[in-house]
Length: 133
Image (cartoon, rainbow, N blue to C red; front, side, top):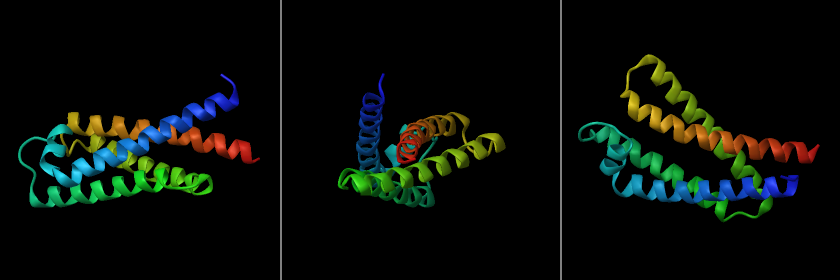
């Protein structure tokens, strides 16, 4: 795969991630209980979990919309912001997996999702940095 093709493939993946952020964000905000259940968390969420799920939903929605509504220069910044968020979320999830203080299946599922987003984002940002030098 040549450089242009791989860049287009990564851009397609990042665009799909942005759409995924929007969908997940809307779902998390509109139906936090269904969202936590889909993530594998047991029982009915507390008020605190419902609130934090909606905060997450707003953030995911903003990241997705910010990327999709931006010109090419701004997309570069949004990719980097998304990468910071995804790496941070993945690291936090790994810490909780190691501690064992949250349900393992739910946490592993979320770490897999955020880790995949982080890996794709890192590949695209690295490609951009190599092109700039």
